Image (cartoon, rainbow, N blue to C red):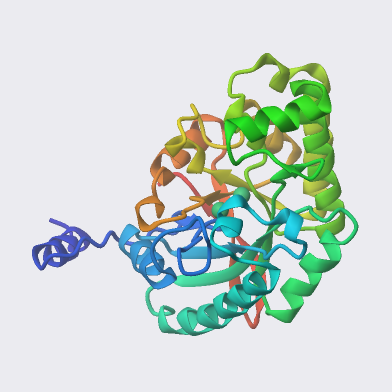
Length: 313
Ligand SMILES: [Zn+2]
Ligand SMILES: [Zn+2]
């Protein structure tokens, strides 16, 4: 029995299961908790405890940025009677709670504090993202596209079909999606790009997703990501939703690697059950597609820097 195994055994024998932290166990997208997100569950503190138990070395929490226009509220926010002012206050509470928890957990795990920002409203999303980062001293941003033509498309299959029909079909929809990702990269320059091929959620396996026009749009978007120095979120949240692989698809993983865009993991957790779920599979998936290392972020002398870790032992 190694010392590490003995440590696990000792901890298990008193009723806890705590895995040993490993450098590759990082998530830069997730930690959407029930106390700060209308569609999340469990508290942020419980999420961090779960992250420690899983053995994460770094866990980035990335609350959704608050909608600034009521037309971009999500259904569950409307149902909960929340308005833009309530969401702004929730984000302030999130930032102050995070500031306390970063210090409290610093002996067990590096907690990074970010936000998952949107591309709506079209005219001002980049200014808002920059302001959010500055006002709350966020460590980094995850830039995601959840809206096309101001219609949400990852909420339900019905919403997806409406957004696709509005563009006149799946291929034009996906092309528009990657155009918006490109615009978001240009204007926000996010440290992390969230779930790069999210339209796959309700169209996995459709041939349109790999048409020559889509392949060329993906390649040019990845070139932009490379120029901006962004990291791609190897998002394993897709597995729990029944998709065959994490985001992005294998051919995109290989293309990104050829272009030189690095990956980090994102568990996209919205509850303690999702903290770390799928990460082991995600590691295998990257290795199977020729990715030997992941790139994460860490605090160094008061700033955030990139750090790269091998995936193989
Ligand atoms: Zn969410
Ligand atoms: Zn997202």
